[in-house]
Length: 197
Image 1 (cartoon, rainbow, N blue to C red):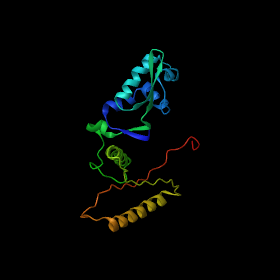
Image 2: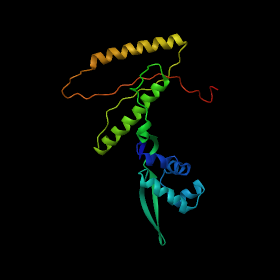
Image 3: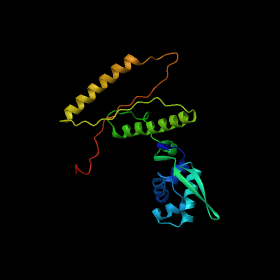
Image 4: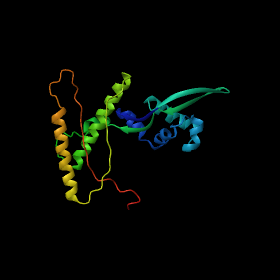
């Protein structure tokens, strides 16, 4: 089971948006059968089986084992990931394109960059998994409290200069065996937690 999986197929995305199927996916972080899940979601076993087949058809759950119970065979399934992200590729006709209106100070442009990141990483993860290779990535996450808007602006300016210096130092346009990498730095206010309200 993966920690997180990216859903690119529109039909698979649609299947996960059903509240019952979403609850089944959450419950199947641990293996379970239609019988054991029926009590959790409050539906008859037959209805649960119907939903499980839809999830299985799209690769969102997988068979762990089959158990004989009298005349019946009980199928034990589990989710293929602990959590899922729906890629903008699932809505390709209306997926955001950050190249259309780049604006470093726009929250919507930042969202378009994040959507592209999800789409590209989803594709790369699928390829790396198929090739049984690790994907070379790096991420950093920090939270900072600024004393003022001026401090935030100064931080953003210094960060931009530092990034530009690093890009100039390490970027080799025509490297014979080089591979392009995408680099994104984002800064946005942290959502207020329930304690801050």
